[in-house]
Length: 444
Ligand code: NDP
Image (cartoon, rainbow, N blue to C red; front, side, top):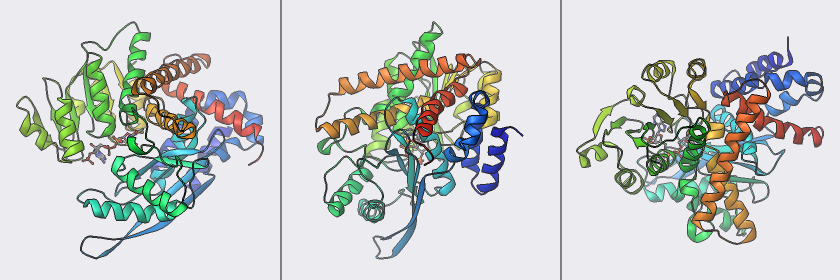
């Protein structure tokens, strides 16, 4: 049995109850085969793959809080510190009822390679809770965040582990968590990113993941002697990533015709009105029905369905496994040229393979959504030097980072004989740096 097969089998045996983590680990290990086979003896002796698939540390803790009726509620909190070979752990906090250890481990594992791809010194981690922010009052959100941070603050710090936002954790939640950290630890440091602009946040962080997604997509088109101008784009999600991906796509001349949330989706052939979408989702925190009510050109549909709309570019920006093989077949039949992932692992393995077999240009989330964490790292730099950069400075650095990522993953794919396979390219380019750092640091 080859070393890769041996490790995949062991990971499956050890983590049988964590399907999302297994999916992520298998996808990465499979695509690393050419690099591993070229160094098989050395990596095996060093148990490099066993180490890289085992988190350095993981915390699971009780989060008790009192709701507005005086009733005590209990949630579970998690922080997985996966790999610190190239820098302090960095990765978001997800607040969603579906959160469990397997999901946090899958996200933390992916984060190792994504962070490495940014070219910045950040390791991989992830955290969150099965708390559902939907329908909670501001005070309930604050009490939850304070309780969550009361425990989490023991394990994080500006030079050790710097969490950020993710699904369910936006500027409001980061603010409450930062306040509680400062109160308990008594230090004012850049321990969280995604902070408000008045207390150490970075300009352009809010826009970064969506904008970054479009910068890499633009570079992909440029490399194929094409532009995004006039292209039809289908976006899923209506959160942070989806909104700013839509905005940048429109600035680049494309027409975005869909968005979605967990209950339904919008088809707006005139092009999504971003300002209206922001008002509905960021300000009023309403369902998409409110968008359709305010916009005569928009159709609202219950359930899922954005991938049935013909397009040139598909940008999944909602959540994991939201684009399956049937969706992939429909997109290909409708002539899609490119799929770039704004969310983490939104495309199933089967659907990814189908895109690759059908010559769709496919950039996975690890590379395509790295703009968020890259700008978080820029926020850390600004906090360390106690300065803040202008929007344009940050945006320009973000663009450079995304363009570099595109060429790194494209070159890595070419180097190992997989030209045009950006999935393999991203995994290899992300892995090589972490592997070298781990080997240099000895058996730790
Ligand atoms: P938000 O919470 O702002 O938005 C998530 C969107 O996806 C909402 O429209 C939500 O709908 C929808 N959604 C969530 N879960 C489901 C589900 N199970 N089925 C259908 N729709 C769902 O999150 P973000 O935009 O920040 O994150 C989106 C994705 O991007 C995630 O995979 C995240 O990990 C990834 N990501 C985010 C980064 C960031 O900087 N924000 C950085 C890198 C990756 P509803 O409101 O109804 O729940």
